[in-house]
Image (tube, rainbow, N blue to C red; front, side, top):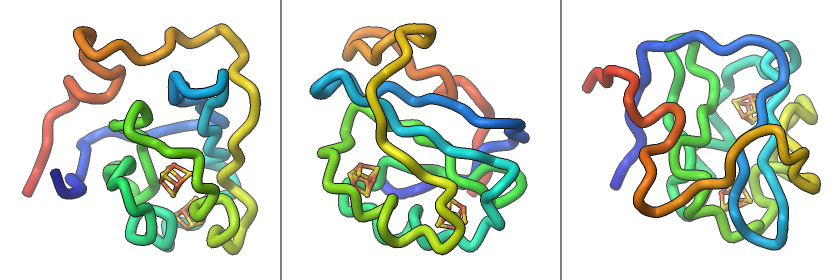
Length: 105
Ligand code: SF4
Ligand code: SF4
């Protein structure tokens, strides 16, 4: 499945639990300049583009914790850290938080 553009706008730092080793992807949208590098380099196509061109980890459950996005981001806006527990971990049978957002080609 390729990346999509989601008609949403993100604010602040958001957490996307991967469900693997208790780790989450964190994206700081204040630091992200929407260059798209993390989105394009992710080998598992975890990210979609938001309306502002920033990454949304729509498929965080597919993340392999390879850290490519973390190391490629020129603005240190992506981190992978222990999950906070405040956001539910992804479950195969449960739609992702952002999967319900409308999509544009
Ligand atoms: S850690 Fe790797 S698999 Fe996970 S979102 Fe980043 S680039 Fe994609
Ligand atoms: S690589 Fe960093 S600055 Fe570029 S889109 Fe991803 S999070 Fe934003």
